[in-house]
Image 1: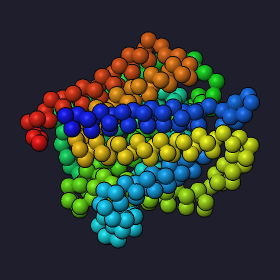
Image 2: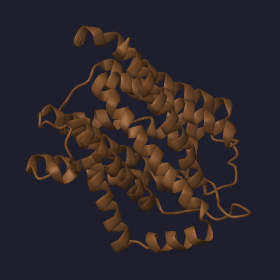
Image 3: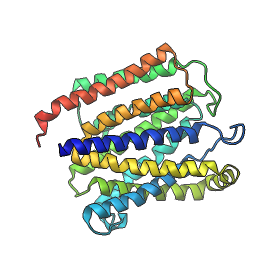
Length: 326
């Protein structure tokens, strides 16, 4: 009963945090500000940096409470092997999110949601190409089904609603492919790091990765872009965007805690099941709240994507008792 209670808490926390987080992200990225909603906030690296800063602070508190002593990322990043793995993951994470944000100028938010739900494919490819890991035939079928679903959804796109989408779908999909490859590197490197048994927990990952990602994002923003100055001017003219960004960062940070608690108390299969259903709900909320129109062909694509990912999660849950017994 205690495990069921924790699962209910984690599922509720992930749903509440990330459904709200996803809707707010769409508001910031694809909806205009101002009286006529014609001004769009274009600072993906800054958004990523603020999110990482908040998650680092919350993660450090989480780590300190978990270990019963005050700790920051500097407490464990002095280990060269840990630092190397963390730095690799931080770089791929830092590159992935802004590139994915950039895709929203060229594809719809629902295409973005579906593509980012396809992390199975790049993770499998990176594991196979870099870490020489093989997968059962069923997993390749699921990857194929998901890919077909995304393609059908994109090709079935009807009339676009007014917004920041400029219609350059090919460029938008290219951004998403690069982002997904970075996601594959992130997840496969995390798996490899845990196999090395370096004593790293979810709390360490949350605080350390966000610390490095925040540093990388802000350094790049300050030295190589004008996002900081442009954002300051935009916030002065449209202060609502600052409120949206801060709430977005807080929700993402809280959601990460529930994700890591789920990983520690259950396993990644349970987490995949929860996050897949969360993405489905986010997409449906987006359809109804922001007035997206989906054709029948696009709904077929949606069914293929989430049918494939859900089938993967169900098979994992059915096989779990054979491989793991508490």
